[in-house]
Structures are given as structure tokens and as C-alpha cells.
Length: 473
Image (tube, rainbow, N blue to C red; front, top):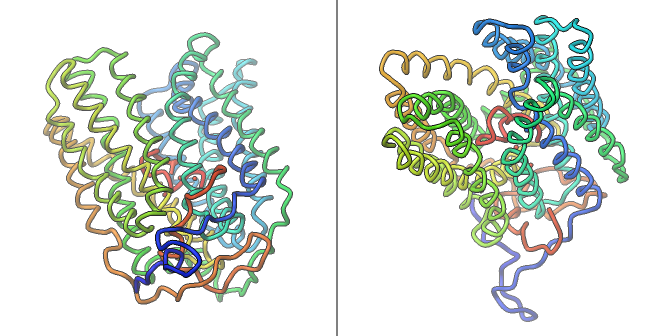
């Protein structure tokens, strides 16, 4: 991509050379959507790990059954969502988002109800897990496209950083709340909160007042598989997205694989107390919050691509410190510092990553690109987790964590270091009420998002560290 000088920062006769034009404030509808996301994310953080907990405490499920619960939900949901990609692409996005939230509410709410009557089964948990994961992918595909239409080009990093901040805040406070609820009210209490959050999210999205633009026109492909796999083809034919896709699969898989092994290292090898383990989980989230708050100002000052590359490299440098942690409190300090720095740069990277992907994906294919990204993450992560687990069993936790740390460093090679010639010329920002331009702007157009006085997204979500590869976008 050819880097142009940022026109907004060019000197004129009427203003000083260093003065930047302030973009318009984010709309009320964005704040409603942001509120819906925040409530839903907090509910999911409260209910994190609730399904395996219910399987263990209420159904006395075996370790194999608990593991299969996660594996089946990932694989089955990917199979279900794959043919839905084109369906989501060529329909209005708000009904899809509301429907996904309501399906998740219904599925999760069925667990405390059937448990109260003694009718809960392991098979029901599997069905709920599949519905929850599949609807999460569908919601992410629809909401990413919807957000692109709701905010202007200059607002994208700011808007995404607002969602990122909400996600890290929810992660920092949600798990302790969920633990207290389970201790006081039983294993299904946190699931009830999670289900309610999806209902509130659906109601909030229903309150959006701006007119949603019509979906892109559909040109049927010769075969449904061609439409369903268009997202992967788009990614592979765009140099920048192709690089980021490989980066996301490596980094996200390594982070997810390291998490359970780090728990073993802390509790078994370093002899840390459970409260110290909890501290090491919660405290570094402050780094994610701070990182997300800096994404907008840094992008406004240095440009989207510069922040994307810098934060993308910086987030890979810290996991290698964890295998060096000594026993006891010094080891706890090393781990907390390493994870805080990792999450700080991940928090700064994720909004710029989401905005880059949004800017460089056509509106005619964005939902399918997001679907392809989420499905790939769901299928890749179990493979990396299993490989790391085998390595930990054979050579010990420190060796396995070192290997995952090496993968995170290698992932930096696949950042979009080379500018792509396929990037379109600079386009004027579109208005949320106006038709979209026929192409997406280059990186430097989206570099002035954060100079705002009013407020301004991520896989799970698989893991909050690689937020925007899946989950709610």
C-alpha cells in the first residue's frame, strides 16, 4: 500500500501546521450499541467457565466429557455457521444481532430452569454450548458490518477502542462477581446473569433509531460453497489481511494454549496460593484497559499502520519472561508484570487491528470475512492447545510455555509489513446517513479518530488477548 501524507495534518493559511481537524462526535446510536455490548460483555465475564462448572458440580461429568463440551461446541458451531455467512451478508444486520442475542438468552436460561426441576442433562449442556458459540460467531459477523456503517472512517479506531475498554473492564470485574454468585447462590447463578445480559443487549439494539442501510445486492454464485467460502478467498487475495490472518491464528492459538499451562506452573511448580493465582488473572487486565484507552490518541498522532505494527510486535515480547519466574512471591511479580505489559500492548493493538480489517474489507464481503476469521480461530485453537498440552506432559510446563512464547514472537513476522498496491486511493469519509464510498480508504485516512470530547470493540472471543478474531465485534 502506498503511504500518503495525512491530508488532515497539512498546513494551511488558516490554521497552524500541527492542528488536526476534530472528527464529529459519536452518535447516540453508537452509545446505545456500546451500552448493549458492555452489558452483554459483563454478563459473559460473570458467566465465564459456567458450563464446565455446571457439568462438574451438578452432573458429575468426567474430565473427558468436560473437554468434549468445549471441543464439540467449537467444531459443531463452525459447521453450522459456515453456510450462514452469505445469509448474514445479504440481510440487514440488526435483526441478525437481535436474533442471536435472543437465541443465546433462551438457550442459557433453559439451564437454571431445568436444573431447578432436576431435568438437566449433559446432552442439553452440549446443545447450549453449540448454540452459544454459533450465535456468537453470527453476532460478530453482523455487528462488525453494522459498526462500519454506524461510524465514520475517522471514528473507527475510537469506536473500537471503546468496545475494547469495555471488554477489559468486564474481564477484570466479571470473574470475581461470578465466583461470589456461584459461592452464594449455586452453580447456575452466573449462567442466569449471562442469559439476562443477552436479553438486555437485544432490547438495547432494538432501541437504535437511525435507519440501517440496505444490505449489498446479492449475485448468486454457481454453488453455495463458493459463496460460503468467499471470506477466505477475500482474505487470501489481500496481502495485508492475509498477513494479519496468519498473525492472528499463531498469536491467538499460542495465547490460548499457554493459559492452562501457566495455571499449572503457578499452582504446582511455583507453589502460589489460589488467591495469588486469582490476582495474576485479574490485575493484568488493568494493562488491557490502559492500552485500549491509548489506541485512539496514538493512532491520531502516529497513524493507524504505525500503531498496528508497533503494538503488534510489542505484545509478543513478554510471554518469554513467564518461564523464568522463580517460586513464591518473586515469581508472582514476574508473571503479573509480564502479563500486564502483554495485555497493555494487546489492548492498543486490537482496536487498530479491527479498524484495519474494517477499512480493507469491502462491505459486500465483510460479514463473510468476519465469519471466516471466527471459524478459523475456533478450529485452530484446539489443535494448538492439544499440542502444547502434549509438550507440557512430555517436557514440563516451562518448556511448553517457552514454545508458545516463541510462537507469539514468530507471529510478528506475519504483520502487514509491506504496503499493498491493492489499497484504493484516499476517499472522503462517509456519513452514517450517506451511501458508502465504493472502496475502503487507506490506512492514513483512519488515523484521526481520537480527538473527541465525547465517547467512542474484539475473539472471544476465544481469549480477550486476541479479542477481534472472534466473539462479539
